[in-house]
Image 1: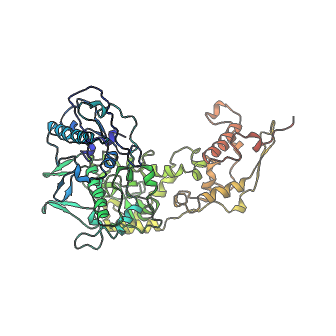
Image 2: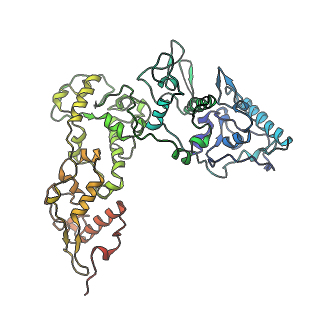
Image 3: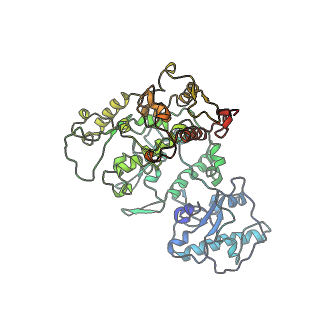
Length: 543
């Protein structure tokens, strides 16, 4: 966590203590800084800004921002931060980094100087001259509790709806107050409607210089935009957001953020649906679509917006078409991750398959999907790859943006969904499992009750309804590897004696029952009957 918050990334965001000291003696100050109000050590920053000019002589200094803010409660941010063109610089006592010597002087003279003044005035303070190791420690006493905060739909809407955030000149919405692009001709940042993007699209972990313009880091940009705005809003007497580390970057603070239950759709010119088709790095040529061609995907964008709380779930780097970064061959902008990988990677949170796997891991789904092999049968490909060839005879990649939106909406809205399973009257109410009656009595299995409970758990689940393509699909969780049917074959049809060489790794009947039932109880967190309570399923016989 601390590496992520190094000042190579933070670029001197907050006021700090000395980076390089002339002495290496371990001396403990007798004065103690007051503790900040709450937040634990979420304000802990490891200061490495001088590292951009060469190796450090001592370990990075550990700095507690909220702790210092509490100690300087009678002063304001100008005590440590300068103002440039009406904006507060997030660097400590400077507006730019010039050299290692400059940084060393800035930190030592100001930090140690302030500490010395407070000590001479009889106040509690931090380390003074020669107490180098009080700041420069190889490892802090505890790791930072800092966690990232994101702009979900609720928080985003609250900013849009805030009367204190005024629109830029000539606009009827306030999006341009935060979102902007650089206008090379005008040499300034401007707002372009429907082109609002994630801050990370331009602001990276380190400063980027292009066309003679230096783009600040994400940390610099977000804190300059958010913290300074919060401060200005509070000064104007309006409700505002946090201005300290603990106010945003702790689990406790984030749990207290007001959540808008029904967030209106946040519009950015996005379509309700579109068609996702492979895009090559090579020039596009017309082609004839054949029966062997893989169909394009009709993607219901609106439904996926409703299912997630932020655009970053899919648009992890920038808000753009997937194929802008991920092509058939892969390209630099997408870290050479091919489109097929971006969509089908099982462990990637932002991929279609990876995201769906996360949903299948939910307790109501895990009873089936934990046990069933995590593979994608060929038949399920058509659930997504569903654009008929006649709607894109020259290939979906040849469709215009408008055509993709209309074709995507047509196909996505006509998609068939399967809710639940067969009519309950066609499902046996109870099943007696007596194939192995010996030491124990037969199991009186409440078959219909279990089905009803599981169907209720996924009621209204659009993902399940879209991929359970047949009423019998639901039954495949237990009756796997057999044709979909209202009357599937008995377990003993496939599972016979244990350890038969001709059956490979297929378990025997006893193992199959116990593996299926016990794993389901574990995955779905069923406590009664416990998966190890033998007598609760089958009573012991009196022999």
